[in-house]
Image 1 (cartoon, rainbow, N blue to C red):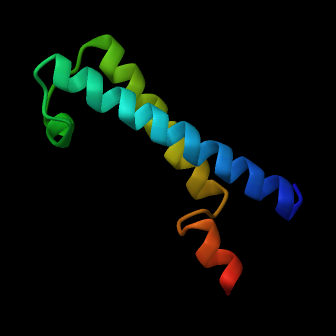
Image 2: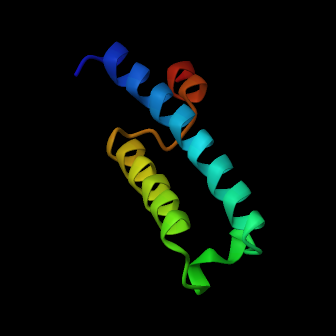
Image 3: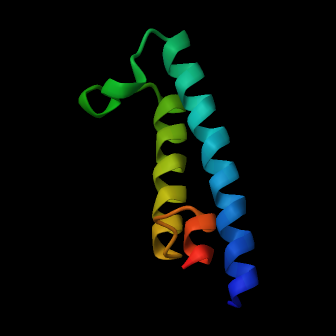
Length: 76
């Protein structure tokens, strides 16, 4: 994977993660859950699926080496 392809994938994943996190927070609050406390409770299936999707995207970002913002990486 070229650097340009990698950067495009990182950007795509960050956008996807942002949307998934927004959906998760909205759905959690609608169901009376505090999104900050999800590790300590059993979640309904839909919330669990959203959380799993967030974790998968974060894992892929980590695998791509995107632990810092794109702007900071390119400034080095």
